[in-house]
Image (cartoon, rainbow, N blue to C red):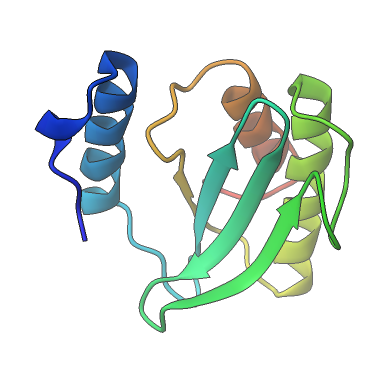
Length: 124
């Protein structure tokens, strides 16, 4: 269920939420071309490969928990996470994916992540 963006008091968060909804209208993942949903916080980074048709998460790579690749959320860690995402996609015989930045601006960590995925042979 969507929030009413007029109720979000923080202007930065409201803009991010509007961007997120605009992106999700256009970006749809499938079994042969999954959606790479990025969740970024100040401490951690998580990427999930999602099949929206089946409503299932194919795999997840993050900087915490069981599939921990790096320690924190910076550009170097994003490159490691991107390389791991690309390797996992290649194991699943997938060469294409769609990138969902979840309303975050395409700079810094998000850009480093996307570039690392592309450098390792995945078309996004």
